Length: 420
Image (cartoon, rainbow, N blue to C red; front, side):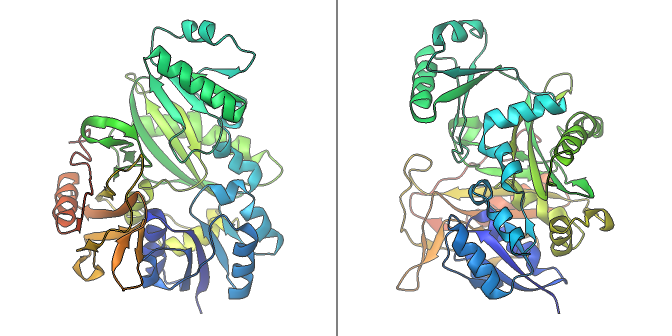
């Protein structure tokens, strides 16, 4: 008998996790909560919100779940992992202490400095600070201002407009009490997902996300409009630097704490012109859409790997990766990211149209009372392709997205442009 797993969340990342787990010989039952119109294909969706910690624990116990995989960050910051572990249920996702690496930018900065990890210098600004003086001290570059709370990937402003900077700082102090102003780091961004537990860590292939809403990296920040993997900006030499200067020291620092880090650490990187990596941010879960491009390149049994990290046996597993390229394009609702229009019907997203090379992951989707697939969120679907070359993967994804119709929807047509 295989294991029963509960996947917490309802986005494209969770669909990608369910898809990978469905191919695992070690998994027999997949439960998702709350899931979406796509995850139901892999097992059962349950109607427990990802923010209902007590409800999630109760569900896991009632179902006799062998381990839980947590998609979003908020339940981890609220202590879901701790609660599950107290009932003897292994969890892929760090406990509350470590989840602060994403929950608080200030906590993360202090951890990076303690571990000796390269990152941007910063100032902490509160109501007693001389805002003009601090802005003047960094006026020769764009101001990078970060809220010290979970903000769904939208708590950062990078601007050369002094009024905009000042307004965002004052707003943030008003709501959060303080805000961080960082030194601007020029370079190219990339992401490294690192699976870790008490016994060791494994770096997954590096990827590159596209956070801005529109082509040419224009428009407001989003949760992510597409990604590809592997990212050629992370050469073998740079990969070694990331491991030696960032991942290794951070793993040692986290291991020195009272409880081990079990789950995935998302390392948001900036690679400068000299090829030196700096940490922009840490997240304590798989990125979305990075998850969609990274998991398909894992050759090994994903169910076994996630369970091993949840039970401190990661060092006993064998990780192998496919020598292929993957690319994901996100389809978003009209009005996203400001105010997405929901409830519109979707055609062409049927699983029957998927191929082994190209498939659709659901995110903001639901089947309404009339049995029609409709949009229920900002990011609605993502199309992922895997191929021998990045160009081929890109072509396949864009061919498939043309088959999908959702009134007013938009997607970027330049995903992967930096690599191509």
